[in-house]
Amino acid sequence: MTAFDFQTTLRLHPQSQTKRKPMFRTMLGGKIHRATVTEADLNYVGSITVDQDLLDAAGILVNEKVAIVNNNNGERFETYTIPGERGSGVVCLNGAAARLVQKGDIVIIMSYVMLSEPEIAAHEPKVVLVDEHNKIRDILSYEPPHTVL
Picture (spheres, one colour):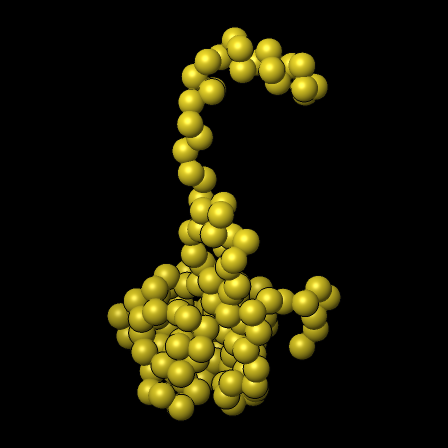
């Protein structure tokens, strides 16, 4: 569309000249990267139990919706968080989600936030890198391109 076409469209459609409503985008809020699944409890009601220290570091709240990616089998699913004992390193998938993981699997736990266009420029997600025991190794506010861990 040329500038002329755009101006013509505005003249022909005056409603398009009304004040633009704020647009929100879904952005990464926090991420616990490459956590090791310590348990899978099929008989629990549901959710993912995560060490409260990890939730705090990633800015993920208790009962917040999270997306889970299983690096071992490619499964992607959503659930909500419940707090695990601080310092325990627990990452336990509960209920039906327990069918999608096995103890020892590597998972990525992500939360998302809705931000307005002006908020996006100042937003920095919290990316928590953990070791094989789910202890915090580093906390980043970005993901460098082509990062391999």
